[in-house]
Amino acid sequence: MKDLIDTIVKQYFGADMDPVLLDRLQSVHLPGGKWLFREGDPGDALYFLIQGRLQAWAGTGEAARLLGEVRPGDSVGEAGLLAGDPRSAGIRAIRDSFLVRLDKKDFEHLARQHPDMVMKLAGHVSRLMQQNLADAPREGRRFKTICLLTLHGTDRVERSREALVQDLLDQVGGLALCPERLRQLGAPSAEGASLSTDLRRWLAEQEARQPLLVFLCGTEDSAWTRFVLRQSDLVVRLADATESPVPTQAERALNAECTQVLALHHRGEHIAGTAEWLAGRPVDHHFHLREGLGEDHARLVRILAGTSVGLVLGAGAVRGLSELGVHKAMVELGIPVDWVGGSSIGSIVAGAIARGWTPEHAIAMSRLSFVKGKPFSDYTLPVVSLIRGERMMRLLRAQLDVAIEDLPIPYFCVSSRLDRGDVHVHQHGSLVEAIRASAALPGVLPPAVVEEELVVDGAVLNNLPVDVMRQKLVGTVIAVDVSSRHTRRVDYEETPGSWAVLRGRWLPFTRRYRVPSLATLILRSTEIGSLAQARQRRASADLLISPPVSKFRMTDVSAFDPIVEVGYSHGLKALRAWQESREPGRSSSIGLEAKGAAAG
Image (cartoon, rainbow, N blue to C red; front, side):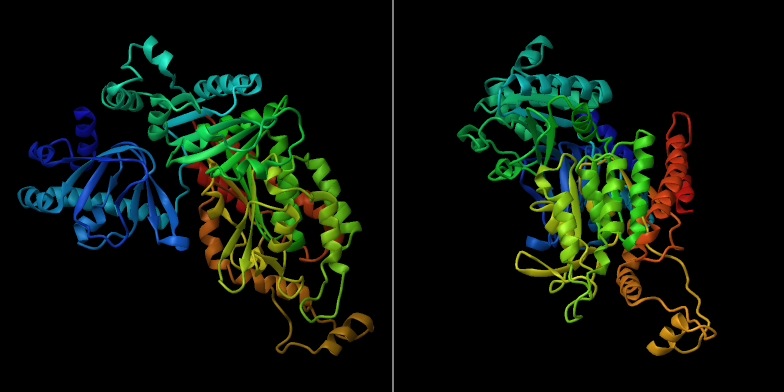
């Protein structure tokens, strides 16, 4: 452990640092769930994380938001130490963690003797700030320790666990550990008093050497189970959908502060009743494993390995149908969609993808809904909206009437809460109602009611929810942006009146004014409200695809096939360039070139 501390600290202060520094470091053992410090606390020390995992949080209560994770080798508190400011965020352990602490008075004492220490630490802070300002795409969620917790010992679950372990270690490398395996390796015992001392030290050494440790256990109340739950970055609860969904007493007694997910195994392809399984279980996400469908298993392996792909589909009215073409290109090139989310029209396309539809089926159903169904022709007395929305709801119920929890591919969409002025993320309940809220364009469609609050189109506050996808267990984020960046020029100095516009359309030899329709004006006005934030979200995607759809009117459903084709052809080009940039031996900087190729 001392060698590990030496290595980490030297990364910050250099190999020629004073050995006295190591003598002034204090050991800190932080149990999972405990706070190292909270936002606003004095910046009185610098910490280095040696083992475990921490989370940085801003705000409190409902306003609290996760800023990121702290991994072994990272430092915490350097900015506050240098500036003397209060803590700008709170730091909480999500598993048992070990840190070393350098008090402010000791740092100042050493800094007077070695001024270069301050410069090196300031340089580190500067590099961190530059990374944040550049808004570089974040590295995917990668875990060092994963616990596979078997809730039901059925053959289906046992076979799945064995396959998960095998494929996960084949892809990532590492060790799978249980009490029997520890004995085979000659490791300290997983029983008795030595479990919390010798075994902890041995596991710390293995964690530093291995890319991944996978702990295997059941719900029995054993010292091993309790121990590994405190050492895990992620706990995966493996359950059989044919069993009772009610948590057992033994399962309720288990406690883990880290990220937890439920992997639900199904006898066939049909998924139903997932909400019952989620009730009473402290899980952050859930995944479905349907017997005989290898894509579900492969998806979970990618998610656990940190190599999964999240697809974000933006708002843009009818232009958003080009996202169907991008999805077709992804499937053709063998790029999986492991998580999908969207805003406004993107929520509809994302719903079709999350149902597991093939691109051909999704395109056919969308053509049936938008071209033949004519959802934008359902006009009403314009008291609340121009369109009643009943025709759209009938079309949605006919095709997407399913609970979000029962979708085979994880899904979310966003809407905008009118009174609070913030974004609501839909990831539970009726898919139809979620889409209705996300696509409730103000003035065009009626607002929706969610949890006794009025919500409108997600594009009002977030037309490309890359930030929401970044909070999921995804490694790579691909975003499709169909918002308009086309500058419209007009050939008149004053806006013509309604009669002048109508005369130009109906009567020959009269001036024809190029005036956008009322619906187009509302749609474009909605986009403007989130343009500044959208630029930042676009930059945080690993690959941004922007099909050239500005030439299409935002409500022209008759252009369905050309719009989809533009998405397909442009997506194919951008995705191929991106794939080539990721080939071994190619420069990692080409990821930015792929973005440029996609921006078209």
